[in-house]
Length: 94
Image (tube, rainbow, N blue to C red; front, side):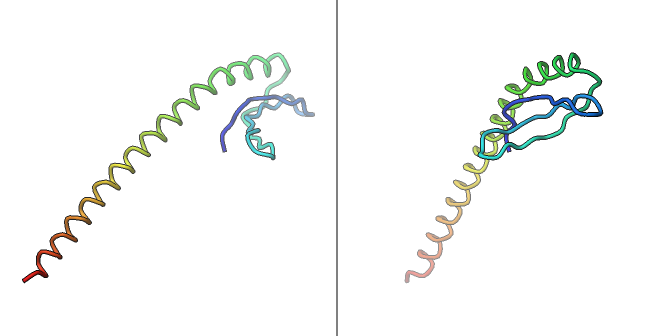
C-alpha cells in the first residue's frame, strides 16, 4: 500500500485525518489523528501533504538499496555455485 494523498472528514466527534491510497480500484484509508475543528484539520492536512513526497522518496531509496543488495548477493551466490560446479567437473576427470 502506498499512500498517495491526505484528507480529512468531519464526524460527530471532531474532524478525522486520513492518509489515503487511491492507486488501486479500492480506496484504502489509514487513520492518522482526530482534531477539534476544520481549521486545525486543514492545517495538519497541508503539513502531512508536504511530507508525503519526502516519505515516498525515502521509501524509494530504501527499495533501491535493498534491490542492489539482493542483486549483489545473487551474483555472489551464482559465482560460488559456478566455482563449485567447475571443481566437481575437474575432480571427476581422470
